[in-house]
Figure 1 (cartoon, rainbow, N blue to C red):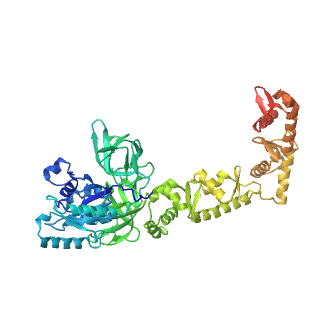
Figure 2: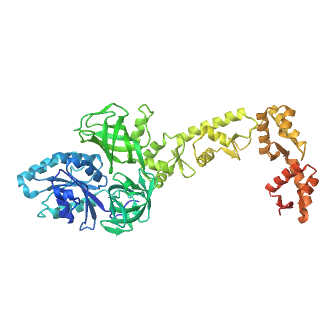
Figure 3: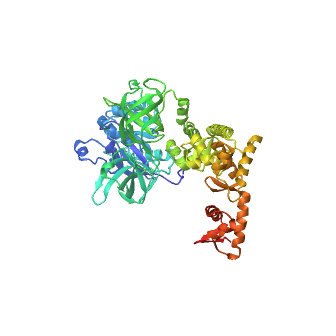
Length: 630
């Protein structure tokens, strides 16, 4: 559901900027909390890994800070923190201005989809007014054309506290104006820290990017096939029973080994996310990057995950700086990815940021010459959910489970169902399978043609066997989807037979003669009929044709089956049934031998006939006797 106007989710505020520009000091001045937690960070005076702090603004809005390292050697840690940011503080020191990591961080933020933030010029006590004006001008040039182009700029001195009140006011305004994202139903928590707590076991932390997590929830650890149980939750060091989207969460987990919980993996709602090693993407190369040739090895970052991979283009062999195109990302290890995820690519060696993009489709390998591939990827790149749904359905050769479609769209099954209920171009089968309606109509035309051809080859049969038809036209379909498709196509399923119309197709005169001959040969025997083999040999009819005629007679109830290879006419059945009913009236109980005499047939035939009456609930067997079912 969309966030109500009175409901405020926590805002995740990140920092970004060059090393030693005062990011950690600024966060400490705002929150009173030191985000440098590692002994090496304390000793060296620089941030190495992600740090976290929180505060509550005068408006009541909760803000959680992710403090990222500024040194170029720790960019991988910086990238791991960006995925959960709602907004960012781009920090620039007044005494140094825009530096290399300022520019690289800004490019990373843009590529990873951060859209809100502001600029903070720190260390104001170290610069005079003229220098400050110059730095502001340099910052304006650096953010030109980015999401920070019209963002507010605050000048502060975190040590003395100068400008902090103004900064907090800007933060309040930023939080109020920030576009609220939808609070999805599906849990997704990328893991950025793992540690053990004596007496509690394994604890992981991360930013809950969507959904709500509860104590005792069962979640999947992606990309493994393991499930975990949430034993406990903490938000800002306080135990809670539920954590919401946007909160920094510590999760005490049970069910997996400590070694399996590593940065880059994700806790997710079961079935909502999977590890993949191939994805169709829209990739952009930074203007500052060298050209990127196809099959070049690169570092790939998404969420808190990092791996190596290669890029293959669909419409070129090389991507030029500042250009964008559709491509396939082939990864060397599986990482958790879904549609709409942002990713970053960095050169293999030396390592520096060269581009990034957005995931359009996961887990499906494409070929350059694939028909309509580029228009379909263009549809997947748009924000129109209905168009995306059609693009996902279009290449399918049959109906697909709505849960799979939801996974490919990067959303929930409930949302997908809402998208397609009013869309006549989408077919819903058995309430849970989706298919493109035009593709279904083409399939239905082919199915009807198959039925007609089968009818021509087997004119005596009352239709085509259901399982034979499925094996030819819907081999890998779920049975319920197939039956639902037959219903939607107004086809008749008569027991194990499928045909186009309600009535069995009429036979030609010579065909009717064959049917009558077989029927008469069997009916003449009354309750003591000849076997099928005997009738077929007497009439010299081919086996397949004979079997087709008999099935037709069964379906029309002109013949009644006693067992495989033996049947009686409906008239003989009614006559025998009447004799048995007369013999058992008044509550009489008779043995099989006694009823055999009543029917005037052999014991073997009497047993078969009486078992038929039992199946049709005319008689009931009690020990060695039978009675009428009242």
